[in-house]
Image: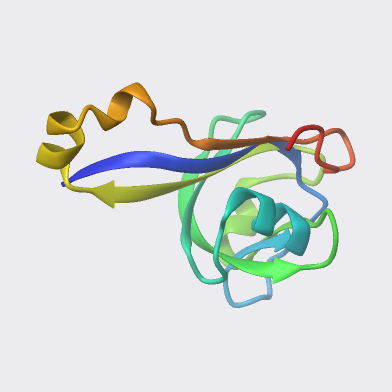
Amino acid sequence: MIELLKSKIHRATVTDSNLNYEGSITIGKQLMNEAGIHEYEKVVVVDINNGQRFETYAIQGEENTICLNGAAARLVCIGDKVIIMTYQLIDGDMYIREKCFENYSPKIIHVDETNAICNK
């Protein structure tokens, strides 16, 4: 098995943080749908401002929301730019044998300062 990037939301702006929540990252419903992120799916988050990289799971929130919850709230500041990534496991032998890499590309979602989608 090999792990490939499935999708990412690129340069989203953190809109909120909630230390007293039970963990996760809240992502707006439309952003989750466009990126193909399922509720409770594991995500990797990279904070562009401070270099923090951590794993958590996604929960659905209101439009254009990016909110870090629980312990992860200590790793970001409101206004920070983050990259949110998901990965998928595939059969590496089949991937190479069938030359899937020639046509493979992850879903990349670019957003503006308000986390509105700039591309589809």
